[in-house]
Image (cartoon, rainbow, N blue to C red; front, side):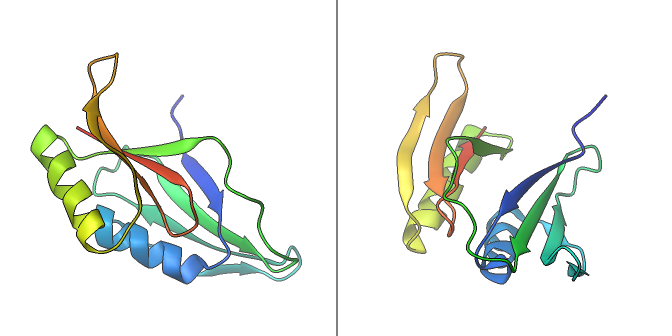
Length: 124
C-alpha cells in the first residue's frame, strides 16, 4: 500500500494552489468541478512520481472549517534546502511558525503557515 493523496480544504483554492506551486515546484491538474456536490478541486504533484499528491478543495456550500491540528511535511532533501526555503518564505511575508531546528528524531525542519493557516513542515 502507499498513500495516494492528502486533501485540504481551502476558502481560496486559486491562492493556495499558486502558493504550493511557487514554493514547492508542484504541477497542477486542471480544475475539477462537481456541481452536484458543490466541489471544486485541484490535484498538485511533485516531480517524484511515487510521492502522494496534494488535493486542494473548496465546497461552495459555505466556508471551510478551521485548520486542524495536523500538518503537511515536504522534504527539500537537505538542511541547506530547509534554510533557503524558510528564508524565502519569510522574505515573501509568510508566517514562520517555528524556526529551523533539529527534532528529537534527528530530523532538521522549520514550520511555516500556508495562506489558509495550515502548518507545513519544511524538512531536510
